[in-house]
Amino acid sequence: MNENLHTTVGRFLDHKRALGRQYHSEEHELRLLVRFARTHRAHRLDQLTPALIQDFLASRSRPRPRSFNHLLGVVRGLLDWAVAHELLEASPLRVRPRRVTSTRIPCLFDAAQARRLLAAAAVLPDNSRAVGRGPTYRTIFALCYGLGLRAGEACGLRMHDVDTPRRLLLVRGGKFGKSRLVPHGPRIAELVGDQVQRRQADGATSPDAALFSFDGHHCVHPGTASATFHRLVATLDLTVPDGVCPPTLHSRLPSARLIPTPSKYVDAPHSSSPARDRSAPGHGRACRRAAHRPGAGSGVQGAATCSPVGGPGRPADRLAGRWFATTTGALPWASRTSRRTICPVTLREGRR
Picture 1 (cartoon, one colour):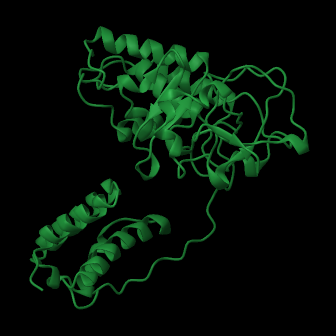
Picture 2 (cartoon, one colour):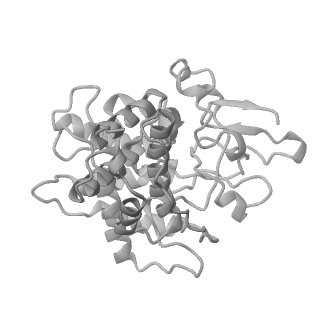
C-alpha cells in the first residue's frame, strides 16, 4: 500500500507496452499527474485522494469533452490497474465523464485550397535552425493531402521507407502501432524523390536516416508541422462554413476519392508484414467500394482522382476515413453487380 507513485506509473507503462500499446500521450499525461502530486506532497500511491485527483483534472484546461474524457480514462486506467494488482484497496476516482454532444464535421480542403496551401508552404523562408523549410513542409503537406497520412506518419518516414521503383511508402508505427504499404502516383513520387536527393546532399547516407529533418539527425516533430500548418492557413483567409471545425493538419483530406489497389501491389514481396494490418484505415467498415472514371489523372500533387461509386460528393463517403490515392490509369465505372470491396491498406481485393 506504500508504493511510490513514480514507480507505479513506470510499472503500469511497462505493462501496457508489453501488450503492444505505444502509450506515448498517456505517458505524458501520467507524468503530469506525478508532478502535480509531488507539488502537493503526495509521493505514494495511497496518498492520491479523491479531492487531489479532482483538483488535478480541474487544473488541466480541457474544454472539449472528448479531450477531458481521454485524460480521465488514462487516470482511471492507472488506478484500476493498481486495484487489480492489489496496490490499492479501492480506486479514489470519483469524477464522472463529461457528456459528449454532437460534434462538428472536419474541414476538408478542395483542390484549389490545397494548391494554395502547398504554394504558400513552398516559399517558407529558412531560419538559423531550419534550412530548406519550404520544400520540406511542402512535401509533408502533400503527403498528408495526397495520401491521407497522419502528421506523425509523414514526419516519421525514414530513407529506407521509400520504395522508388515500385512507388511505395512503408508507413511504420501508425494507429495502434501497425505498419502498412501506401502506393502513390508519379507526382508524389517526384516530390519524395526530390526530398531524398536533398537529404542525400546533406549527408544522410544511412538507410535509417530521417526523410524530413532540419538538424540532420531527428525527424521533424509533428507538433512543429501542425503549428506551421496553422500559421499558413491563417494567411489563406479560408471561409469555414457553420457547423464545420477549423482546419487542422489531422483532417485536411481532400473531398475524398479512392481507387482500387493496383494488382501489381497485391503479391508484392515486401508486403508480407504490413499486409496483415487489420486495424488500419481502409479495412473493415472503413473499406469503400470504388472504381475509376474516364479522365482520371488530374489530381493535385498525386491526390485521388476518382469518386466513389454511387456518385461524387456524398458526405458519408467524404468523411468515412483516411484513404490513399494513386494516379494510375483509368477504368470504366463499375456496375452495381460488379462492385469490389477494396482494402488498399491490406493490399488485397475480395468480394463482399
